Image 1 (cartoon, one colour):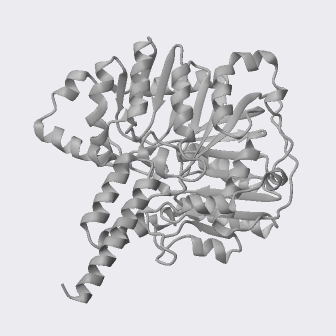
Image 2: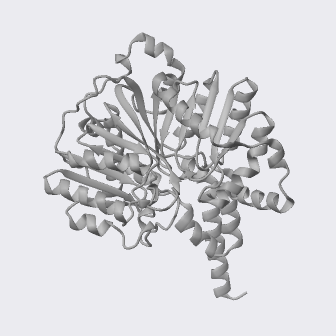
Image 3: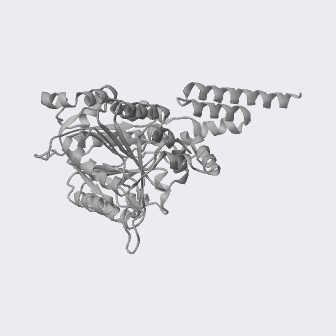
Length: 474
């Protein structure tokens, strides 16, 4: 063996063993760790290079380095009505749910809020644009997709008009979501004077080529008074186009009250993570809705310091259920832990309803989901398939008093890889309203039977099983 061969072999062993060891120590998912270890060891140089570009979670380090101090956070918040302001009746009524999120999520549960459902783009966009037209001091907008189409241009013009009136305007668009339309609308926004940044744009130096670690949050805050969040991006695809059937159904929400401060705080955390700057903007005195008193809390989830918070909260909340659990999600690939918790709840006599689309926009996710439905159906969990249009809304309701709304799906990408945002709401009236909304969906859906899933052909089973095998990366 000549010297050059020895050098190459030594480099191979060094890079392969180092990258495999890094994956072994740093990866929290055993299947992901195992696959990266195999790739690094059996593919000389290619495996370690692939792991360097695609396998390392650098965002956790960035988050730690640029995370807000307590003092900095206090500067960005208004005076909130906190849990200590609740009557003992409210605290006692929801004490289990309150205790769960208090233990996991650092943000306070805040009273004095109002939350209103906005259905589809037709219900959400006009309300959002009207609120932006009334802005006097500040608009912040974070979204996964901001298409350069008719809807996107309406929002771009509204943001530019606000900037022209002297309003401070900040826009954060996910770096991968920005590629959904070409040319990107970002250039138009920047040209109008709007401060616009991409979240983790794809680039070679420093390496950031992953389609994972995306910012899937949807946040719009106007003057620290009105906030919007949910599942709707900024795109024509959320509208029913003339002469065509609706392609996508979705849910968005208008929020008022102190919860808006938490939305704004989360936006600034993401903004500073990407820019390193602490923004200075004109403060606005919040005007609360006098008739509303919904206890709400923002739950942030992501592959940084917030990793797995949402999953823990969902699991714990299901464990406290006494009557019913209803889950609506466009993508359903639950972890083994969640499957076990759902089965345990069903065996305790809890009625569990899971509402899924008959066909989503991602056939491989549908296939992976079908592969594990038999286990739920076998233990009397109700699964419903919605007919078209594809329902992109996300919601969890427990015991007709606890509601989770926001951007997260029940799949590994949302609960492990993406930056997500959910809002928990403890209010019986709102929960009953959302139950009625989901009941309408259930009535037009068909219930899936155990026999239907078990009677799939061998070819279908193989296809579904292969999709499920790669579910940690879907």
